[in-house]
Image (cartoon, rainbow, N blue to C red; front, side):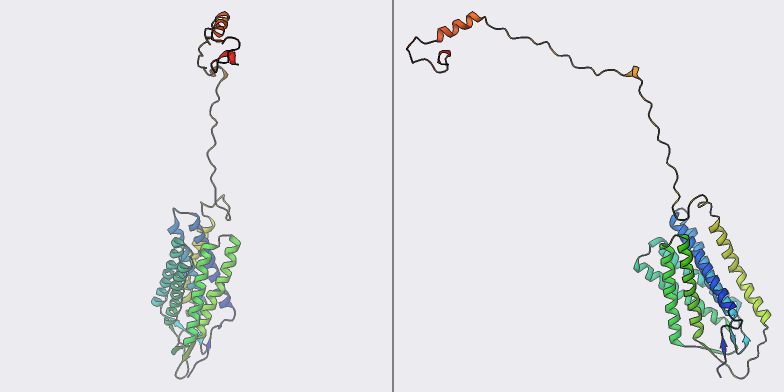
Length: 313
């Protein structure tokens, strides 16, 4: 028979806490990616820290939400090895997408590839976590709802990667992380809506609520510490101390050195080239000139004067 499945065994506490952790991981991941865009010497370190923050945020959200999952009023149990493996998958697939957009940019083709890989990887992480669960029965999934959850994961991952390289302001990052928290949490509960559990007879749980909470808290303490360390690194990054979050940090240029002025005593006038004194051409005496014109003049009444002679003027 089909058992009653509930995702809100403790009421609204688990979904709200799961949403907060998803937003925290997204916000830290976005800030780390922003740091990587502003720095080139430690780009890989910031991208890796951002991948770990987003992956831990998604995984922590998933298992906080799973605290509120119950089958027929009985709490479920988990395989610790497969649970930790799902955490490694979450960090790895997020790292693939973050490094792709971090080094190759946010072009449409690159975003499509990175978003698809990351989204499918997040969905794989979700269903690996479900495979680690002992629900005291046979678990079935509605295929169409599973496909819808994968589509939501791909869209959410693509939007997250776009925001990681496009949004740099502090308040814009916080707003984007709130939207991403809705998308990631929505993907989780969409996938959980596809679950149905079939059992034979009455469910008898041998695990108490206290032991289950202890196990999950033990699983969550590691990722929570990682998120806390990431928050401290982002807040107290020495490269950003004294600079604005919104604007790049500019270093002052070296002071311009004015060359030493010349003293007046050192100034010398430009040497002009010496000109040769003007020598007037020797002029013939006036009387000789007059005699020359008189010799060339034609007699009176004679029109055979040579052309160009003085008498023809």
